[in-house]
Length: 426
Image 1 (spheres, one colour):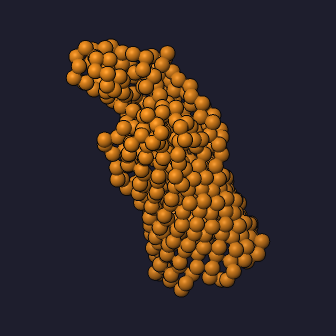
Image 2 (cartoon, helix red, strand yellow):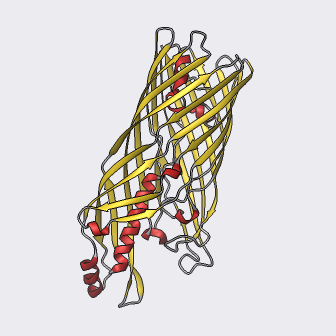
Image 3 (tube, one colour):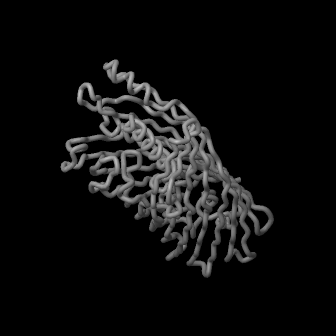
């Protein structure tokens, strides 16, 4: 059956695309202080998470420190079918509830008067789109789960007067993906559409090595200018597609389906993570208040097409154009030292998405986002405890009749992120 083969290929292409598009599910919240300031941290960079945001900031940290924590992330997503569509009119769907907890760990140590070395472990990319049954869009995606982890040693140097600092590091990143969807087909004996197979892909970890650089300049005691760059990466994945037939109850139809389904087989693909550039300026109107504005930019335009290779049946190989665009985010944050022990933080962010409307589907329904943040820190002797809350609203995204699978409608999404960190200085 040609329909079965095309449905499987479409699913695998979408499946690999979900792995790739970390921008829509990038996790920029890699430290509670930065999160409390909405990620406006490249020109501040005064704790261990500088390894992620701007490694030059390590140089201004002249004590041995350890910072550990995590970000607790919850998503809600609702789909409303297009009332004008023959496929999705009246369709409703929503995510199963999940809490994702990407961890972070940083350690830094000064060397001499001008150098500081450090190491960071974090998870800056990931997604989970798990639709609750019954889900009419299960032929596109039922569940998608991308996990990543990074190990990033870094070193920074500053001038004797501390006005200029530069830093850089090497990042080892690994990633893996799990995806699940059903195939549907029209049963010619009943005239009804039936679930005929479940397609599951679970990859092994792939990996790549990249780098990051940063600079921090303080023209005066009140102003700081920061910039950083994290290189693009390409991660090769090797996985296995498992196709399990779903009995329909019609022996004749099941026999036809069984002969047409492709065998379980290994699959390979490659997907790119974008380069990330950040520039910002910080201003201290008083000795107790810091305000920063920055812009981050991700180079998703390098992802023009996706190639999927089937190793057992090469003829099933598939190339699909993607035509993503670069995306930027604009962040404003404030940290106020209310007392010698307490800090208070606020922030706001507007984050563009890179996804063209024709690529919006249940696997990755991305949209522009707006968010507000708040947080506090408490210091006691050598300890610091911090928390931050971000409320993120995704603008409604309507496929406007452009979905290639005909699954058109409106996606409504929201997220809440709680960052916590505990730090100790020696």
